[in-house]
Image (cartoon, rainbow, N blue to C red; front, side):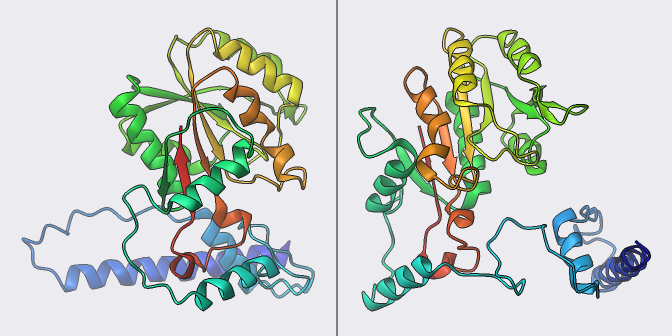
Length: 295
């Protein structure tokens, strides 16, 4: 703990110095009439802060759990062999980097649908390719605001820290429903169902398809069926954020069950994150695509 405390103080000091330097630089290089003088300093990023603490910690037992990406036993990023092979095949095709259609690469969109809905799906889908998970959330949020006739979205308590900020930028007010029983550290299913039953008709509801972030607590298949049965008669719009398909159980098909349960009865939006699935954080430029948004 002493090592961690010292590291945290040291990192905080460096961060403070860096922030002060940036502020002085900005002030010294702008005139008193500059429109940038009133730009507020952004809040520190918690994940990047953890990465800094990890890098500075000298304890050989340290493990980085800040970013959801594959790492080897040496602690370094591990690129899956399948990703390396796909990269080789793309390079061998000598692609011309032509602009894609506005909805993205059609074959990629279809394969993404196969992954989350299954190849034997019989539901019509509209889909478009977007940039990253945050990009999918933003596009989905703006679509809801423009065409879904909703002004708010109900999110689990807790949820990923960026959800609220993204939907706020879309003009949607964030509200919550109960999800985690903090005392027992398990799903508060009774509380969740009670809150969902009280939702106004036609509400937008954010759901985590699997491996709920940040708790890792998921409903069972039977509970998903009950959730679907509650939302259907209210004509709610479930918005699935599917960032970790395959991570929860090790079976990508099994982890898509939540989406499959609800597709049978209600309209919804889904944003699978392939950056995390295949460790493509540094591959977006080479592969030219990452995520998909569809409904």
